[in-house]
Image 1 (cartoon, rainbow, N blue to C red):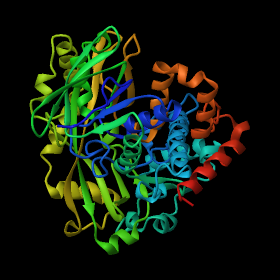
Image 2 (cartoon, rainbow, N blue to C red):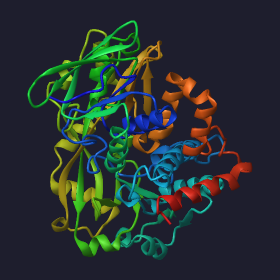
Image 3 (cartoon, helix red, strand yellow):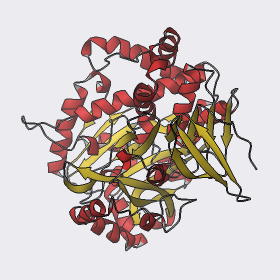
Image 4 (cartoon, helix red, strand yellow):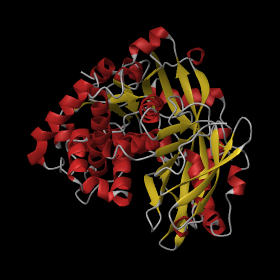
Length: 497
């Protein structure tokens, strides 16, 4: 039976990148805090943050056209979302660079590596779209180093596989060398390992939290040991639920008013992966393409250089598939049916009807053959041969479904944190750009639930160390020099340059 910190100040449920960042920042801001982390798997960060279970893209708005789908009144592509995502990712970059600089974690190449980010389109309509997108993005100092070309030879120079055996149709691409490939499982493990070694902190793996009960002082929890089945209890003033797909279930157990009406719809993923050394050597980029029909934003196809556990691969996808499990390794096929409650059944039914194209998309994905998937890959890499690619399972994303302005429930593809009125429990819901913007998201939780830690002289000084631009407006063109200063230092500390 595991040992625990009894009656800690904070309980973290889940050991993914959200809990890892929150626990790290809390302990930095107040070293006296007692923190207990519970993780259901035997290893840290094995679910959504695992390197094979997500895209591994440092989402900074550079290449993801799903962040810029709309045109403004002037007919030009609206790039505001891409700009805001870039700033949010910068917060993650700065915090992790601080942890490396201070020697709190080591070997940044274990979790972050420089990989150019590209957007690629074909067909005149999409070329016009990308032309407008580049015009708007390159005008902002975040993206001033972005390159654009409609020259097939230049695109071939940037990413040879894209032009291999391609016909004469118009193509266009943008490229920016400041992109990253991230193993979110690795950074999570490093931060959680540091946390577990601090006084008053403990990390307990193989422990499933099975119950949450509110008290006048906070929360009581019950955890079940996954080996011997023993039950332990604990209590804390604050609970953070960063349990990936399991967050919906935890919220339902909590009984808080704010969670009523919420449901979850699991979407499983698959990748095509190539480890052929000759092909891998030819591709050095994360290339995001055009949305495919009713596919959700998390399923926009991309052809990626990946570095996982020190080895380079090319991944393509993701492809969707249907499941009723909420967790990849520790989930149950009863997760979805058991999550249907009287307070959310209407929302779930309405959502199913209003999102019927999504349901059709998932059914179609399940029915695909390997050749069907290869044909999608050939939209990017026309010369792709089946012998070089394997199909692997990826992670599961549970999309939050909720009532919105009294209308039918809709599937949300963003990232949000649900917090109760007393500010004693918060839970993460949603997907992309989640992990990349995890530090920014957890800072919102700190502001809402631990404002006192950010208001003391000690807290302000520590925040200035961890995130030097905290509270500054880097979007303002007047602060371009400040942005370049902190970004350069962070890149050096993370060994990106």
